[in-house]
Amino acid sequence: MSNFQIYRVKEHKTAYALKNNQLVHISVVTRGLACDCKCVACGKPLIAKKGPERIDHFAHAADTECSGAAETALHLLAKELFKELTSVVLPQYKFEKEKVLKRSYTPVRHEQIVANGGEVPISMAFIEQAEDRFTPDVTLESNSKRLFVEIAVTHKVDRNKLRHIRKQGLPAIEIHLDLVDAILSREELYTKLKNDINSKRWLFHPKQREAERIFIDKVRAAMRHARKPAIKTQRNTLTRPQTHIPTPNRARNEGFSNTQMDRMRYEFFLKFGRQATDEEAPKLQAILYGNRMATWSNEPSYASIKGKRED
Image 1 (cartoon, rainbow, N blue to C red):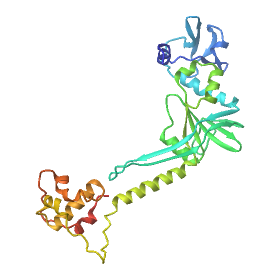
Image 2: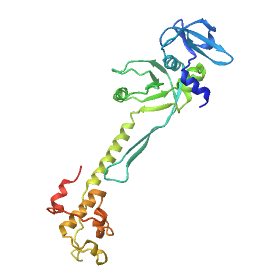
Image 3: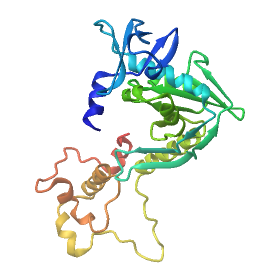
Image 4: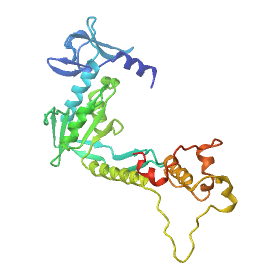
């Protein structure tokens, strides 16, 4: 961003004002107080500052604490321009969700294309049409389908409004406009509202409910897998089951009873969310406790504590 743009953001300049209750651009009015214009936010008289050394903009004729002229002008102008738009280009909507479980190293993810985006024709545009305790900035109709449009400048859509949007079950997008856009001409802002996909983001699409359901199913399946106890190896009647640790590594666990070994195996499962491998089994004491010795007062068995796993 250039120094000139930073200056404009700080000053919140606007090229739009009200004249005879109509929103006008500074290019069509007379210079100075003779413009007979009023602020769109506070309604006080404005001066049209026009000259070769500065960008044309309106300023209050007297000192005031009004600071919302640029934002208010953008809201009003965007709604007016949507009445003139014959189509709008929407971005692709890719549903992406991720959750990290306590007992799993691999996060649960789900990605799904919910809407392909592209240019959508507009047959009708309704401004601030109430929808069951919710009033979107603009409601567009396209081929008997509806789309909610929210205009955001300094305030994004809050959770309460988003909840009402989801309740309606209709697709909705948010278009973000910068305060510097209040200096753009009507033609420039018209083009941005129609074609710019970087300023648009999806708030909701009814098809995302299916993607959300799939993600929840994935999370539940991962949680069940993390809580699942070790599967006991079935005895083979033809071969003798192995009941001892291989001789080369057995010495590392010498001195522990079967109950203590069961306890260490279960603590390993609680800590790492999986069963110890054949290579890790002879080293349970070192893995769990390092150089210190494990102490148990009552030495409960695995069978007595397996029902007390963490949720």
